[in-house]
Structure formats: C-alpha cells, structure tokens
Length: 98
Image 1 (cartoon, rainbow, N blue to C red):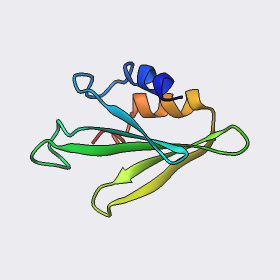
Image 2: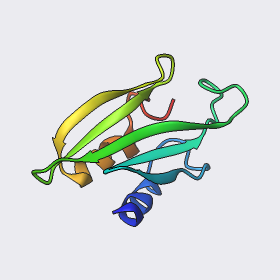
Image 3: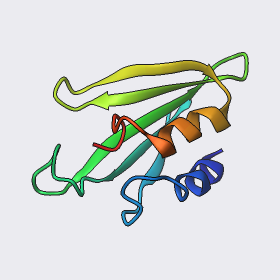
Image 4: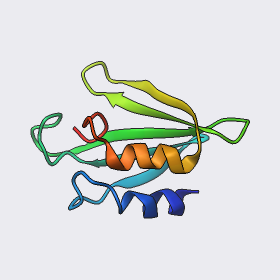
C-alpha cells in the first residue's frame, strides 16, 4: 500500500517541490512533509499532513492534523483509497497542506 500512496502524492496540487514521506503507523499510514509555508513551523521542519486508515470493510478514513491542538481530526470515512488520495492531493481548502 505504501508505494501506491507515495506514487499518488506525486500528483498533488500543493507544495509539489517538497518530498512527503509516508510512514506506516500501526494499521494506518501517516504522511509528513517539510513545512515550506512556515505557517505551522517557522523553522520549516517536518510536520504531519494526513493519516490514512483502512477499515474492516475495505474502505478508508482520512484524517488531518490540527497542529494547534496537536491532534488528528477525522475528515472523511467510507472512502475508497483513490477517493481519499484525491482529496488529499487536491486539498482545495488547504486543510491538509497548510
């Protein structure tokens, strides 16, 4: 699954010039990347972007990081992996890639 997610992230709209990293975190996959905007980390350090979690029925849940609260916030559930990755890569509201 991880290589599929990594390939999909190459088609993202925001911050195409940074290299996100996909890490396995239990059953989930966590996406992190350098903070180029400096909105979250003024030093440009690596920040959490999203968490993709598979469900027993084969669907996926997508969570975003609330950096102020230092917590994962559910964004959508019941998605196919493709739908979850499309949401993450387009990020029209700049919720994932701050």
